[in-house]
Amino acid sequence: MSKQLQYNKAESEEVGYVLNVLSRVHAVDAKLKEEFENHLLRLSIKKDQILFNENEVCEYIYFIVKGALMGCTTHNKQKITTYISVENDFVSSISGLHGSGYSQEYVVAVEDTHLLAMRNDELNRLFSHHFELNYIFRVVLEKYYKDAQQRAHIIRVGNAKERYLYFAKTNPGYLDRLPLALVASLLNVKASTLLSIKKNFSEKDKNKELEEWGQKLELHINKHQSFRHKDVRLQSLAKEIGLSSHKLSIVLNSYFNKSFIDYINQYRVNWIKGSIRNPDIMQNFTLEALAYSAGFSSRSAFYSSFKKLVGMSPVEYSKTLNKEKL
Image 1 (tube, one colour):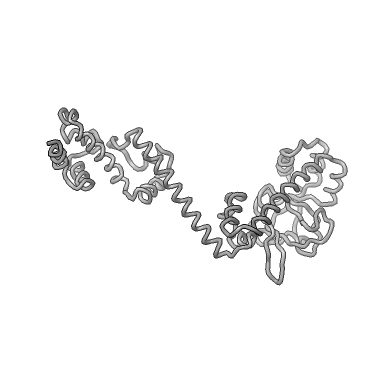
Image 2 (image 1 turned 90 degrees about the vertical axis):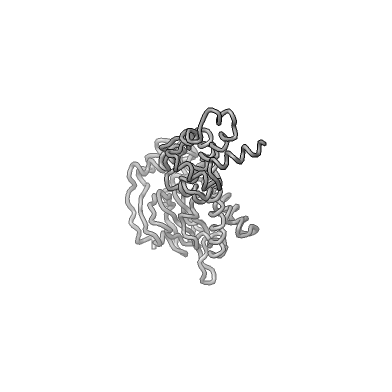
């Protein structure tokens, strides 16, 4: 119950924070700032703690500094999630806005949540004396109702996939942050269905990211010929392209299906194969000289890698090319 909540005077930096949010909509004058400094309150509630109940007059309007709240109602003994609000959202009773009547929904914390609050009687008094506050809250309410209308529309006409995409687009990051059952209730889909869709899109996103980083790696290798550096290492290459060593390892293993050394040696062998095909190069360089220039540190490593990747030794490959020319 809200009567059990502990309200305290807001700290000056908290007042400044909420005033900064309001000022993004409309400039706030000095008198209104003073009113907020005198009447803004702070409170914290734990996860699953109720902020206010159904059939109770909500005496405050709240501003979420940190955390998440959900609005719920019950129908035929079933809980229905009506909205989810997180940082920088204003929250109050929808049906009993500004303390005008009993609330038809209850609000509960999804996470440990820190709030700022102002009593509705104080807020209503400020509405009578400060035009800018009326304008600010008109903009806030317009946004809320537009969002609510869009959500109601997609829930009425959209299939489960479309509802998922709507929520992912309008609430980036929330799908990983909030309980899946809660989001499913808000979107009016089964939790199992939402989980299946989420897994499918997560896999697509993962594959897309792997492709993007794989292409970036290829461009970097071709441009800088990093494979020709004898001291090239997974860690150094990852740093060059802006990836962690762990992520680069995943890209190599999952996207290219190669270990780091096989990936680098493939480039070295391909470079040597191209050089062998050039008569001018072969007149001036031995196979061993090409191997060292390509980045191999020893003759044995060169011969072993070449045979592994080409299926024959470099000498045999060179002879095969000579026969083709005859």
